[in-house]
Image (tube, rainbow, N blue to C red; front, side):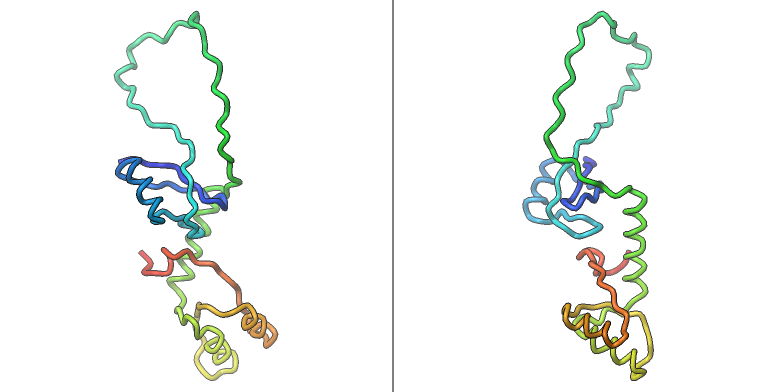
Length: 160
């Protein structure tokens, strides 16, 4: 089992657990690896420090300081994404999970259902769905509050 530090092109960082580096490469090539925050599938592997088991070296003497030191390697040319703090990423995911758990997905019927609730034709409830930008603007002009919330594909299913 290998744990990799990954990041999407939007700067969201996360861990991925794979059977091997080859498993990661294969899943990435098939488009199976995506960001849990935004759902974007352009994911790159980030540098990470491997965990080394050095407990057997506790009793050994430290290397001499007289040995020549090598110059530090040149920094990697990989772009460093502007990441959200991990705590903020967790809060965003928690909020999206709560939104999915406490609303009904009405799909393409979103505008119609929102209007019916606004005009008292049906009971008010939490809904989510899809509508066009023009239709969303028309809802706002009618005094119906709407807000776009992009949901990653993996969050659209059953909340676990």
